[in-house]
Amino acid sequence: MKPADAARELGATLQQAAAAIHAGQPDRAADLCQQVLKRVPGQADALHLLSKIMLDSGQPAEAEKCFLASLAGAPRRADILVNYGNFLRQQGRLAEARKRLRKAVKIEPSSVPAWHGFALTLYKLGELQEAARSAKKTAELAPDYPAAWELLAAVEQKRGNSNAAIEACRAGLKKKPQAHRLLYSLAQLLRQECEFEEAAKVYGYAREQGYRSAESYRNQADALLESGELDQALECATA
Image (cartoon, rainbow, N blue to C red; front, side, top):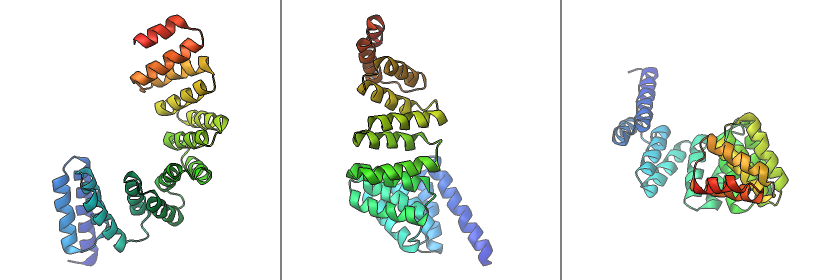
């Protein structure tokens, strides 16, 4: 088989493996990845897919082995670094996660997932000034991505900059008015600033867009109560 044909066949097998993962067929996906690895030991994409399969099946130690083997063959692959960095953060290994994600943003400075993962890791580490810069970078790269604005608002709130946090929410909602988590974040911030009437309205908007929980009703009831709307507060609390 010609090298070009072999490469196309490997690519097709990897695509089938990715499709199997999305279809909820992890065993088939793993078999396809192993087929690739038999032909090309250390193939980075196959190992990267295997890391996801291992994670989804509750095998973090095996997932990490796959991540590291994948990076051994492709140390400058930003997408692998991002997923490994996010894995490390979820494992509570924040300093290690920061190192991998910092490398990812240097390699691929236009990567939204890299900047978002980096900013979130910095936030969890309490490195708030750099977290704010990274969250702003994420929002600049992807202004239609509500999670970027949500994270920026969270960072600014933790820094004690309530006005900046509110402005971050409003800026994101200009791009995505239906972003229910961002609406809820804005309502929380407004209630914290004693803007009870507006907060109550925004809680309602958030719920209309899909943010439904007992907590959202309770918080809206509190905001209505503080703004003097007793009947509405009772109705909301009952709901």
